[in-house]
Length: 183
Image (cartoon, rainbow, N blue to C red):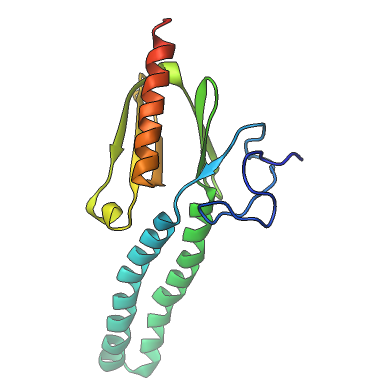
């Protein structure tokens, strides 16, 4: 199988901390230069997981102990186990997000179990938005949302550095105008 070019080789890490991977079944292959999302997205999602699960386990254990006895307090381990599984699942999901700018279109790949590849032709883009909510701003992140003529388009790239999001927005807008002028 061919190596995804432009990224790190197996074992090396790129600027986002992702290790290079070879193309696998279901993953896009070719001469595209794939870029991952920022590590801040991983930190943000793990922080949200901890903010929900730690208080839940801390409150549920003592409440069950006092209300039903020590054996029932063991049930507080279930949310803790789910949180530990979620910790790893969040990392795998973060590593699956990547995008590639080609000559005529933008590729967005994501997903671990249900993999998705979105191809957005530059000429079909109508609007490119950069958004950043309070939590995203705290972690130094922004999201690029692409709107096309299709009502069901789900083209977005979360977890970009604000400078990269603005650069991508400007480039996509410029390429979109150039490609749609010929229509």
